[in-house]
Image (cartoon, rainbow, N blue to C red; front, side):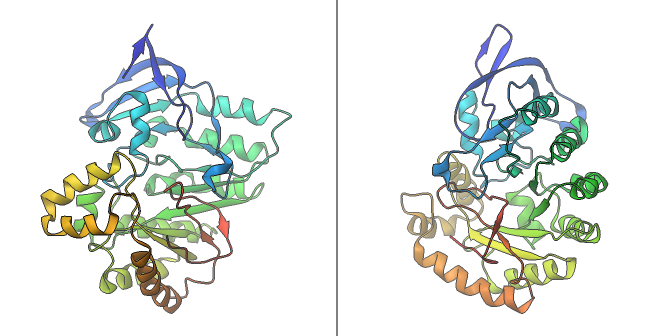
Amino acid sequence: MRWSDQGVVVDDGALPGLGKAGLVRSVQTPEFEGVTFHEVLAKSALNQVPDAANLPFRFTVNTFRGCTHACRYCFARPTHEYLDLDAGRDFDSQVVVKLNVAAVLRKELRRRSWTRETVALGTNTDPYQRAEGRYRLMPGVISALAESATPFSILTKGTLLRRDLPLLRQAAQKVPVSIGISLAFYDAELQKAIEPGTPSPKARLELIRAVADAGFAPHVMVAPVIPYLTDSVSHLESLIAALADAGAAGVTAFPMHLRGATKPWFLEWLAAEHPALVRRYRGLYGRGAYVTPEYSAWLAARMRPLVERHGLSGAAGLRAAASAGAPAPGPTPEALTLF
């Protein structure tokens, strides 16, 4: 990390581009062993997404940079390199916290130029990762958006969202609110190996049920599907059935992307835990970040009847743009989109 005059260089947005924010302090606490939180005062909260990203929204808010979910496949890992941190362990353990994000957001939403376009939360790192329990940034963000009549969507793996369901219900009386849950694992042992910092599949299924009971239509990102590990009929059938039983309104699935520094980080784990798959991955991903078109088509054909059988193909889906490689909350006319 570059330090200058007690400042830390951070990227105030979800996309590449350095900006400076004042460092308040760096904190380590017993309940987050091995994690350092760099508390900063951000200069901006709203991030405008370039048109070239081809996403179904143009504005995002990110309360954190880095994520203790520690997902091996996380597409956002390379963004930590803009902080002069590595995309592996630093991404998991060096977390930038935007202490004033709600206050800055309120100011930005009061601008005459603000047209109240939908704002997406959870497009870079998870706003409901464990640190949200300590910092409580989301209530202020939700309130700011609702009070300014700005629609918003949330995508998360974090069960901390349950804390804010009453506030989200209040917000939904003023503006459209979309809630998406990410759950790609039914096998808890495999989930713990690849997403060690995330809530268990059981806990996330309970979250989906709570979101549905609160009056929302939870959409589930079965993403990423990890080739040769989570793409079997038995695994997908068990997961889709459990999602339907929990009250999911629809699902979207797509294969794992491995962009930039994420690729060697994931393949290092694969070589250690599943060495027999390394050669198959070389053939599947070649020199790029995405699976072959043949695999995508094969996965779509496998998923479609499962989704239809469990009645999850009728709701509008969430689309993930292949060009960005990121799960992206936002409505599309398709219930099942695979890349």
